[in-house]
Every structure is written in structure tokens, then in C-alpha cells.
Length: 203
Image (cartoon, rainbow, N blue to C red):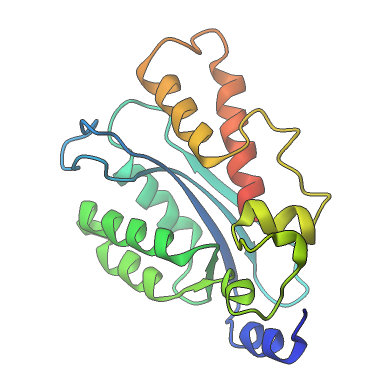
């Protein structure tokens, strides 16, 4: 099922520049950082694809916090540098990305106004599927990106990556920062995390 008029209406409402954003987060029963609470999804990484105008080449930006101190300040500062004050911010599954953005705003007063406005600019690309504008039997009733991507863009596969899902990204990051598990392969693990988040955003 492809409802072209409805899809066009949704996409025509987006404002350039387009910012395609994805976060990776680390929850912990016992907070790792001052000012956070049990099980808070603390953002430690983002990937960002930017299209400045229709037909423009895709520009990629990214940030991964590789120190053991709290990531919020450095991450928010980089995000502020990478995202302008105009344009739609596009995610997949807004109910996750919006609260993370607002929590980041509460943690970093210096960039609170920017981050709160950013949260208001977020558009959920998943709406195209969840509203039934695009449906395929091979989604098997799910509109998760992991269900939709292999059907719509089979050439974009997670199977070749060392990190293949969000849960694995969490545990890999935890072990990278808070253990010596990857002490002899730190640069490769960092690249694995960057590659995963980049593909998650490119979707």
C-alpha cells in the first residue's frame, strides 16, 4: 500500500535544511553520572545527516563521547554547532528522541533554549508507516526501523556491522568506557559505534 498523495503532503510540510538525527543512549540502574537518575537514557552519541536544500548533497556530522565523564555538556555543545535554528529535525520514533532532547536541555542550561526549540522541530518519519501511508506485508505488522529498512532499502543492511542494534550499542559503549574489555581495540570499537549510528541515521 503506497498512498502517494498523503506521503507527499507529509514531506512537503518539512522545512529545509533537513536534519536527520539519531541518538544512542546508556541507561544504568545505578547512575553513572552526577545529576542523572536510575535508568535515565543518557545520550552519549549522535549521528546527523544534513540536506541544506532540495537536491543538495548529504553532509554527515557525528559525535561520540569517549571519556568517562558525563557526556551531556560536550554533546550538547557539538549538537548546537551542527544544527542551525531553522529546518526540520527528522527522526524515527519521536517518543524516544524528544524526551532525550528535553532531558539534555535540563542538564545543560547553557543550551536549554536551543534544545527545547529543537525538540519542537522534530518530525517523526515513522508516521509515514504508522499512519498506513506506506505498508508492506513483509513489515509483518511492525514499523520498527529494523523491520522497515530491509524491505524498503535492502542494500542498507546492519548485518555487515560489528554493532547491529541499540542494545548492543549500549553494552559496547559501557564496556568501552567503564571496563578494560576493549583496551587493545579501542579505536576499532569507537569506529564500530560510529558506523552503527551513522547507518541508523542514514536510513
